[in-house]
Length: 158
Image (tube, rainbow, N blue to C red; front, side, top):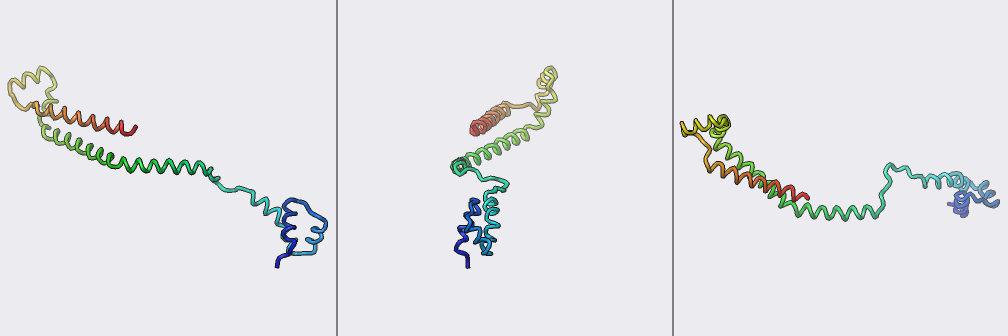
């Protein structure tokens, strides 16, 4: 099937070291002639790197895999904390919504009467809708909780 000298012909073509005996053989053998014609070109072609993205160093890939495995573990461990933060944000937003809804009329009246002289005159004359001590206590508590949740989120990211 194949010529017994084909391997020698391929090596000679690749290294460009021909003997007279191999040149005569190539002239007589069609298989070796075809092999010698493409051998040098195939050798040069095999060394051409035409990939768009050259593969990175295996050590870099190994290091990235180790880092990502650690990151995945951290994300899995932080999931309950993140869920708690979301619930805390919803609770704080609900608290502010309830507080503002509860005292909305008194707040609008209070903002309308921010003029100190007018506020004193109306409150002593009517004794009407005013913001109670309970309202200010709720504002203080909700403000404190909001700050604690915000600080926890900021510090947890670092």
